[in-house]
Image 1 (spheres, rainbow, N blue to C red):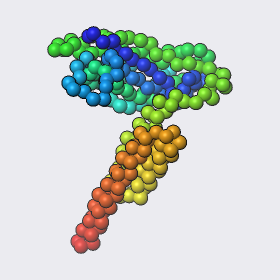
Image 2 (image 1 turned 90 degrees about the vertical axis):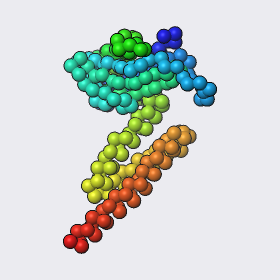
Image 3 (image 1 turned 90 degrees about the horizontal axis):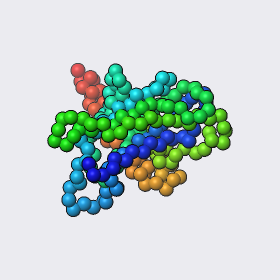
Image 4 (image 1 turned 135 degrees about the vertical axis):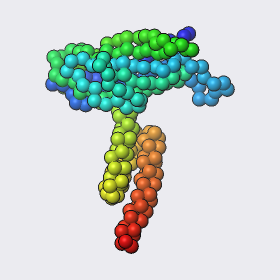
Length: 234
């Protein structure tokens, strides 16, 4: 592999209080080589096949959520399946932790092991291994620092999927107004972020949520009325 495998880890907060934090988020990004150009004349070269990330949380640390990839818990830790990686392609996932109390200073959160499958072979090879840390502090100035905007955006956009599932359950159980309200409030919150931060990604996400609200409204309202009419005719 002639390109460097680059990884970056970003916490949503610069530091957390010594009493611990639940939740605290980390965004993980990875890439081989320079960022890819938007227009390609040839297909990108595959650099890594079946990339996996093994995470081993430290004592007192709980990995509560993994967003953006398939994962499973094993006896040795959490295995995250990240798929194939192409040259210049950037990918990211979001991790949600709960961390217990600790004295001020850096503390280990988990160990990270990156591995890939050799091209045209079944053997796995270790790409890199590292310890991930978080900063504890009792300094109010550090604790009041604003969240990392890129991580904050990823957190907000990742709220859509679990909320869609919650709304869909409400629709399926006949609570149509409840499901509609959940989606409407989420779309409104995204539009507020779009206006406040002048970011079209929030607007695009809000548009998707509103389209789904319209689609679910028609689908489940029609189905509900059909069931009611069937019951009345029996």
